Amino acid sequence: MSRGLRNRNPGNIRRSTTTYKGETTSRDPAFKTFESMAWGYRAMFVLLDTYKRRHGCDTLRQMIDRYAPPVENNTVAYINTVASRSHVAPDSRISTDNREVMVPIVSAMSFVENGVPAVAADVEAGWKLFIQYRP
Image (tube, rainbow, N blue to C red; front, side, top):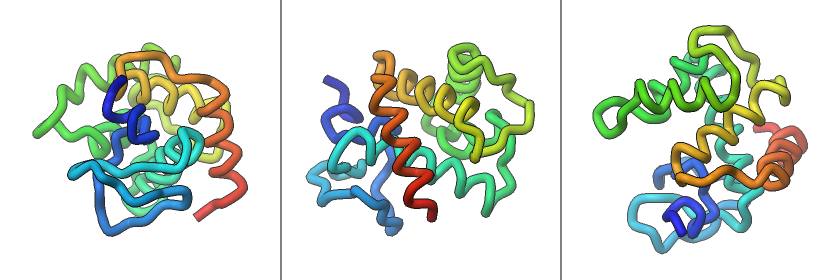
């Protein structure tokens, strides 16, 4: 099982001063841990929404450039994989409020991070938590 799945952190969100709803005390020295996969997916939706609102990232390419920077990732491959799996063009403008766009993007990002397809019910549950508990 991948580290992201073990931590119920399908986006492999790094430890930071930001605390997300559903976050638990992590024993992992580098990554956050969540109560459930749904809370982990919610954190991904929140983080991408924050990128848009606070940093002006409104395309898949801009979001992933920030999320998975080239200093530690093959960002081009990450973008291409997410674009292909989500059917969202890298440079098209996206709304983080659009379920039909964001659920496939986050599912595809989880695939890149963990090497296995996301469980659709978990991603949908994360989306519902995101909508219910907007930051």
